[in-house]
Image 1: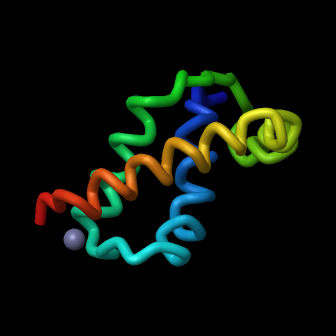
Image 2: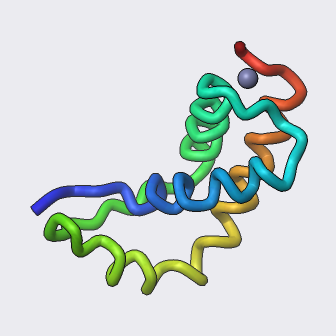
Length: 86
Ligand SMILES: [Zn+2]
């Protein structure tokens, strides 16, 4: 069994898509900064799951929070774009 932060999985899933549709830098530093900012602005959602069985649980949450997640990533992208740390 493992404890996972479902919000973190969602952010990882959506990150590439949001980055690809914006003009932000795509280096490792900027991607991680975007993730950190987005995750600090979203509530964590911890779930206990058997390894490899994340996705059935994950999908139940999907529509509910994906709008929030994309919004937080978009805000983070705009912050990093304005003031990159690299
Ligand atoms: Zn960069």
